[in-house]
Image (cartoon, rainbow, N blue to C red; front, side, top):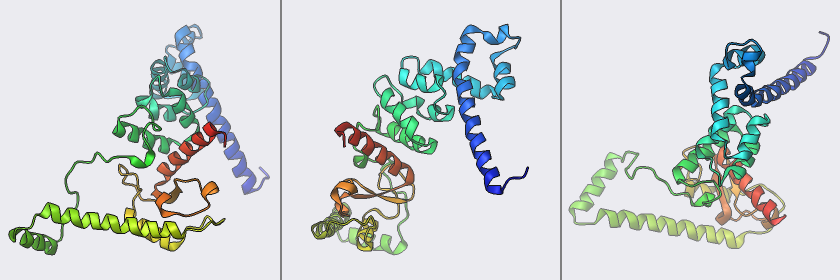
Length: 275
């Protein structure tokens, strides 16, 4: 084959995408093939043999397709994605547990737009929040449901000092809560100072001083309280294109998945307002 490496790679990607698309289209036909028992009339012993010989599908994939079709019976938007082969089985499988008659149209949009990994994060959040869909609770007001116990160790020196204060009759809960309140007030004051000094800019570069205060407030983790993944990106909760500032009161460090979810929410709000 007398073609360059780049051309060969381009062809592989092109054919690979086409193969995935037609595989999804084939999977979308399986519920109807099963309903008509077409596989029997064509000489196959089962729907599994039919799918394996014609498209190389496993029994698990066939069972999943048939199960999803039943689960989406009263959810036409999601069912359409399956039967028309618009998205992969795996993406639909990620959201079936949180799909409802009320949220299925909105969820179908998410399945089209978001990656499989991001859908896993969205589904996990929905289960934690015990809500029907991701837009029913503000993204940055997520309350942590982690067990109310320490998941870290205190140093021996700190334990000794706390014990000494306790022996002296100090209320440890009051002492620690006061320290945390002072920290919170300190951060709020610094953010307010930065906010008042914020100037309009066309640069998307976030100043180091602003990043520093975000690090002081959130550490290195995603600011969604139920998420333990490292923060990868800083999200403007006020659209930068409109505000043109890096006001720390409207910035939140997020992991990649929650950043993608946040932007999908922004896009929906923008579409609603026609902006």
